[in-house]
Length: 220
Picture (cartoon, one colour):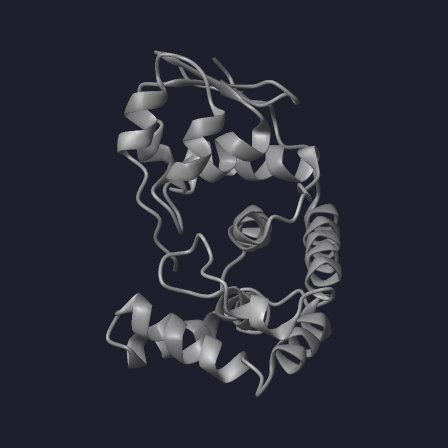
């Protein structure tokens, strides 16, 4: 089944990135300091570490990213740990201030703008879900990310995860693939493609067990 064509310009994509960053910052502004230490859905990182990672991603261009990866000998865990440490504040409040300052940035490690929209929408849910914050990214933003994830393995093995499956959003236009059906909200489909197994519990269809078995979150 064909996926919806992307119609957004790069300027529109950056506007969506900025909007999703701002929404996340507003959600975080209400947190007590101890909640910043909550484990996120993103592997071993806490909420505060994920926020610092987002600030790093919004502040690191291609040359600097490559130099950092090279310096880490292509150990992406080490690369990410170094960069988030650089952008993490002495307190959660300072970490949030640094993230807020990066909201309008258009800096990225590559020109794959839908991937950097994915960076913020996926990590925002990595943060919100454990904290019980009921806020979902805009469906049009999620559709853009889902379409990109379905088309290639980039920062996550999303295309591989859905190989041989048909995905269908129940709240938007996203459709992709052929095979056993997986149905659900666009956010649940996107997060499952990004390797977040917990979201498979919100999906229906005979293809869900196969997708669940392929969920392996990895950050780059």
